[in-house]
View 1 (tube, one colour):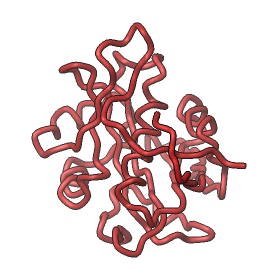
View 2: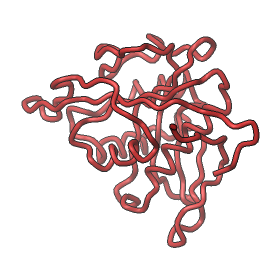
View 3: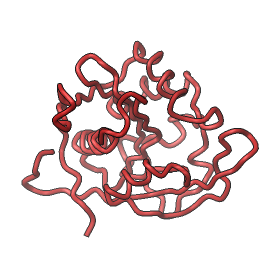
View 4: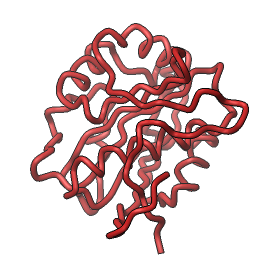
Length: 206
């Protein structure tokens, strides 16, 4: 049986060496410089999004565009969209730089697509990626009760990210051969993973 994804809280308690606790907030256009800095440090040049892509995501779906803080420091960011569920996803839907308006449907969509997530290098290795990931899913799922599943695409070589997703009970749905090209020469597979969103009548908070 798949894991329960629980409703959100704004403060996500971190390990004892991380004080104050992790805080999630909707990203604003004032955060774009820091978002692009984390993007450049978190991904190879061939895997990075343009500034205008993030600007449109923030303007269109602020509820799914989240920044994480520890005190006054930026820890990471995560972005998402709401899609109509497709039994077998196709590679074109996941294209880098795609327009959020192509498939984002917060009224009739039932699947949360996690478009990207990154943690600032200074905060990596502390378990915060998992907290940010689940915090986003929980928060958006609580605001949009029609959501029944969550979906993402991950590079086959991103071992740490895959461990976070598998730990949240996401499972491989389909693999896109040579989907990623981090340097314009080498090619790496993309793996689509999905997990159902299950709800309790009396939820347990994170």
